[in-house]
Length: 276
Image (cartoon, rainbow, N blue to C red; front, top):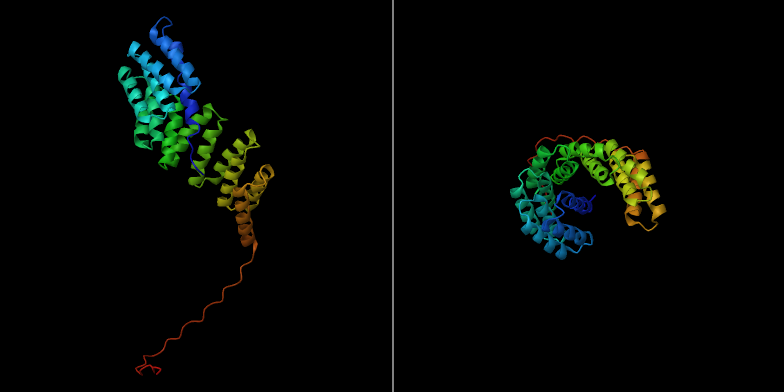
């Protein structure tokens, strides 16, 4: 299973919105931020960056202006500039938990997981109910193969968002690496219940069934995928493999003959005859 970043952007963009509520409606910074947010919603990143730069100049003491600028840089794929903006936001407001979360998110995309965890630890210390901080710290632990710690953080997120498929998917991945197969299957089953027409849940669950040795249920999941997508190569290949393993498990092995003990011969000093 691959670990994707597909869910990072949507969560980060949501952090743009507080700047509207927190800003002064009469200030230039607020107006620039408002225009920048509108541009960001349309993914017009260069335009958004320009507006947020103006907001930062108008009010350099407001961390949310730097947060917005950093998020726009992230949307534009300019990760180093994003880190710089978030760092400047932290300098402006050292207790701004969102700035630490945002910078931590960038570090996870750059595989700088130690730095990410350091930032996300700080965010949680400042705001213990920050679901975003727990979510991305879990992801950093997941990338570092710290599966137990990842599960602990995902548990916190699941309590707040029990139907978040992305979180359940990653916790299931952590469980199967911990060989907690039943727990992994339970998470995939929850995902399947919310998205019964999505193939990925069945494919992932079939793999965990295979690891568990439950070939019948693994084959059933492959059949479900093929009913949704008859040409799905992953399901076809896995079903063949599962059927082979099931057959092998149900076949009585041919007894292996007991090897005849080798005789112990006395030393023979007679030279071995040679041909020719």
